View 1: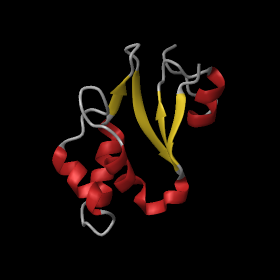
View 2 (view 1 turned 135 degrees about the vertical axis):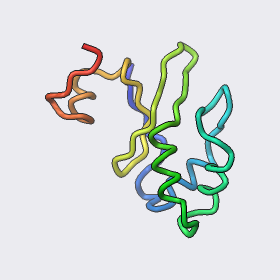
View 3 (view 1 turned 30 degrees about the horizontal axis):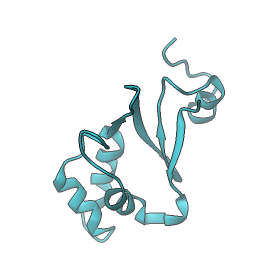
View 4 (view 1 turned 60 degrees about the vertical axis):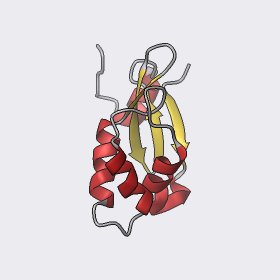
Amino acid sequence: MSGISILLSDNRGVYIPRDFAEGFEFSEYGWQNVNQEDLNILKEGPEHEWYWETWFDVVNNAYYVDAGGKCWNLWQDGDLFAICYEKMTDDERADFFGKDVKMYA
């Protein structure tokens, strides 16, 4: 089972943060550690003066816990991904973080 899931394609460009805020659930059963004020800022789009700073905070702090209790975090490199470090294969870790990175060793 893969530890990587693509959430939003990079073809959305500067609207990835807005679309994430509008299209995903934020609750104890969805993405967590994102406050309503941040969601409101992201929903306004890139014209809001705090859009990118807020997005940086969301990407670095949001998480999702799946039915098996595994934690998923956001990762953006063009596309927006959800990644679960525990479920990632060695090849997936190398692709995302480089071949020299050792996680959970």
